[in-house]
Amino acid sequence: MNRLLGAGQSLRGLLGEERIRAEAIWPALLALMANAPSSLGIFCKDAGGSLGHRLSGVSPEHVFPLPWIPRSPAAQREMFGTYVVRAEWAHATLLVAVLNYMHGGLQFEICRLAPAAAQKRVMRQQMALARRTAQELKDAEVSSRAIRDFMRLDLFGYGARQVARPLGLRAGVPEVAATCDTAKVLAVHNPPLSALCEDPSLLMKAPEDFPVPRRPFCFTDSSYPQLVARAVEAGLQEHGPETDAVFAAGHHRHGGAFAVEKDEHEDRWISPLEFSNDAVRTEDLPPLIAPYMPQLGTTTLRRGKK
Image (cartoon, rainbow, N blue to C red):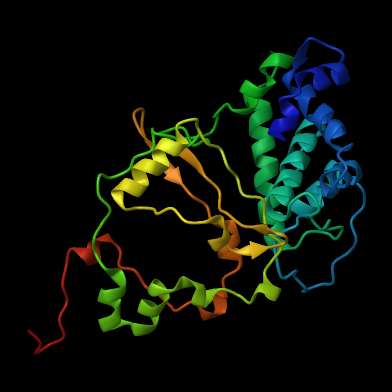
């Protein structure tokens, strides 16, 4: 979506104007993306059409992919208890399309059934975001050149800006990594969990059961190599050959990399591991209950114990 938004000339040609009303961007972008040669394009082209009925009481095993939002406000109100109109509908539809793309890649399976309860919750959130955006940008105009900046506005965050930033040397790295041997400590109290710390691959599915890999999100700064060098020096990371990475769907798989702002001086390093998480046998994860903060400040002993 960001790549398409960077093509200001394409949007300007579609809209026929140098200056664009903000509300006109979404229908134009939906029309532009409908030409994409992928499931993303098919979804945007078919969006708003009728959806098949889902058997009563039968929910899909997964929330994604999401179906599209009906175009009719009456159908939306019946389905979601709320509705969006015109440009808001186009914006919400794009948000749903991009969520499907982020989850399943370019050739995601298109859902043509009415949404289940869990899917409705996600879709209502996108409709609410589209409505808020429309209110914030009411009567606003932007130049086609400024569209990329418009998409990176943080209108609804609180505290530090909750938008993706390029990962680089602004990210905090300690001088020395923690030296607690977690596996050794757990070996006394929870041997199975200790074994998983020593070899996390014990939880991986068999290669033939690997899921379709999701596209990792990478947004790095030119100083990213120096950041990695600093992390290696601190003992947080170590270099290794690419062949050590999991091989699936014809490629060695890696996670994402981006940052979010912690404060005006420092960013928080985010390393999402979508494929590793998807490839875990979740049914074999050992139960783990972590203490909350008040518990960490007290020690409770059974009667008679010292």
